[in-house]
Length: 523
Image 1 (spheres, one colour):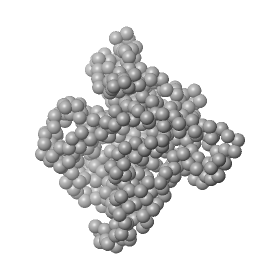
Image 2 (cartoon, one colour):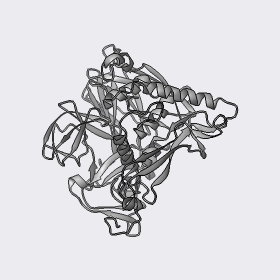
Image 3 (cartoon, one colour):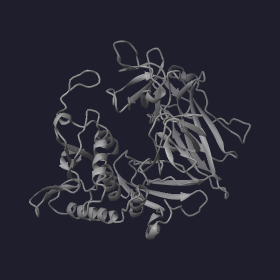
Image 4 (cartoon, one colour):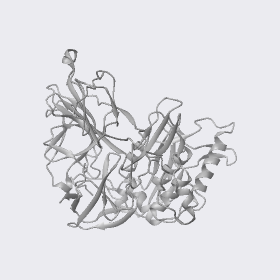
């Protein structure tokens, strides 16, 4: 057997097997020899793991099959809920739910809402998760248990594991599911900008309506620098815009965050532009949502400017206030070469539709490290991936050929750098999951003639479907498929919805589709 490049492979599964077995083992990342949510049971006389399980799929994986696809096949084969077990047929959801539930990120209302979204009954699931929490809490309190008392799923590594290729050299493999010991706590409050009651997730459903009301406050646990952006933790509500899509644990023992759902009447949008002295783009824009309500109450925030090697930002931290009279405002942060910073930096300016002046908001130079604002892009022309920001034949890893819109190479920008000649480069991760370059890390040109945003950044109003089978979903998380569209169909778009690093198109019929531009084109 050979792959599409003519290389011979040892796919013994594809040649001989009709079933595939996966042993799921939750591990403590800081001590891989320790089971997460497990230990030695004197009663059972053996080691155990509350989240450990072995599954067998009646399916023959191929060289391109990922574990996520394998688990999806298992769910098709086992659509019902397995009684008296925390692990359900939906393997990724099970680990996420166990972690989120024990750490307060999801409560009974969230779990029930997940079931409503999926169109199934999860009424027994909160009880099963409660049993899991009770059993683990009791065991971790015993004198003979030594180890972390609680864990949180490392979602980033877990998703990387799910998207990795199935091991075809065996028909029986073990996957270590990565968990981190929890060390931090945070209180997260939820409110609306106008003081009205928080809306329900999906409206009253049978006798479960009372459970679908979001809680006004949650105390959650996690590990340092963990970002919490789980579905239904900060859910999407029609008619509201959340001022943030995630929260991140810091080292503050009394950390408190507030998520504000802003009404259309109160909503204000500030866009921060990062540019060089010549006006060219230095980094992707940052968009912040805030409000000023009828009583005069207003929000504010601070954005840390990205660090670009060899350049100094006119502001390291950008204060964002929403006290302007219009609906939108713009702030510009200018980057100058570090060697000339002592002579004075360019100022960042704020402009809004409500003022004719441009107040000076200069600040400190960017001496401190700052987080990179991630962006998803794709290549529109032939370009190379390089090991360093200094491009040459010796540092080139791979060439991406120019492709049609539906097959363009896609990347996530994770950083910025300058070559020795001062040319801007993107540091990227290749996210072309079905190609041999998937997962490669390197540098590509930041020249706007070669790349553009993978996802629509504004409402296209109408799009034409570019391939058969484009799916629409019941929710922005794209979990429950409701329809498949044919190539050539034209769809009316009501609104563009932001979701993590991506965007979604909310159609006029209430369905969501991915705003990935390889799937549709503006009409």
